[in-house]
Amino acid sequence: MSERTEDLFSDNPGFEGRFPKFQKLFLPLTLLLLKKKPSYGYELVENFSLLGIPFPPDTSLLYKTLRGMEEDGLVKSEWDTEGSGPAKRIYHLTPDGEDVLKGSTIMMKKVRDVIDNCLKLYEELDEKDNRA
Image (cartoon, rainbow, N blue to C red):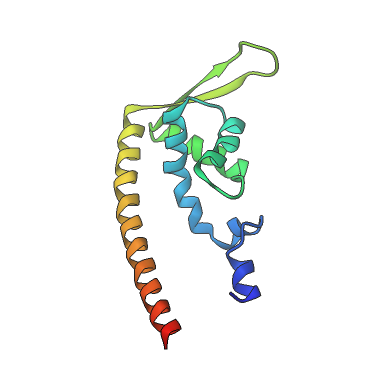
């Protein structure tokens, strides 16, 4: 792999900026994390690593996504004022959010199948090239 290609697809912090379409995954990934556990913004940022995301999401993008999801009825929030420290806005998944998450996972499975087929074809062609 060339150095340029390796740099383009590395896990360095610039990756997110080069691939803005990744932002479209924020919604289903955020819903998934909230299905696992109601949470607040900074905890969600930390939990993205549980999904194998090689870089932390931009907090401003996450909060913008959460606000939009709340306006659309996918999540609801409430202030947690218990415990030490400042109050935290805890986000919970709603039934509509569950529906969107389910639909998103169906689409992700279809995309995964296409990617699997592309990788299989690439490997077959690469193996053929290496034999020649």
